[in-house]
Image 1 (cartoon, rainbow, N blue to C red):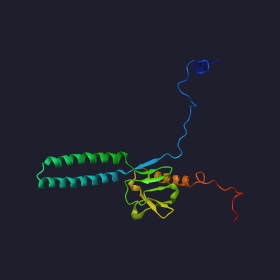
Image 2: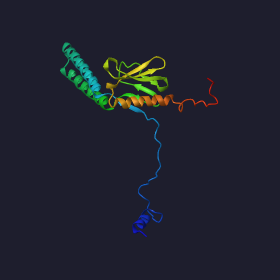
Image 3: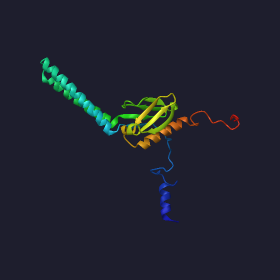
Image 4: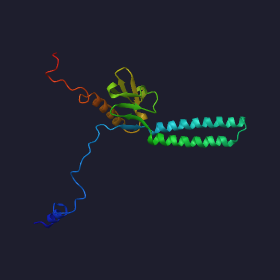
Length: 195
């Protein structure tokens, strides 16, 4: 008899009072079929939006300063507006670059935020007729055409991450929404109409 085998049995076998520290065949929690996906803004676009916010803040500070000079208000009012504005722009920049989701994909459909001029911003996958790649003006885009003639044009340069992974995620969700497993069952050969 091999003493190593015996010590293993005593330690982990039925003769042992101690239970093992881990279990090879533990319970498995089933994963969701298609968890929601969120795609953030590209950093370059986020920085451009922060820059616009800083320009807007500069205009507000100039207007407040002129207002203070005209009505003989203390310079502290303009300083307070500037300080509050900088804090708000900093918070906006942090949220935009770290937390903001530009496109959210779920089992039901898609939702586009923070991107202007894309067309339809929300639709269900059942409404999607086709998904194609296009390059209007040399900018690579993913075009989602809906069955009612509307559409969404998503510039790939506006999204952080891999454009191919995003396109595959969209196409997979459209395919799953239109597959027969989620819709009506297939016709059996007996029920099929004669040609």
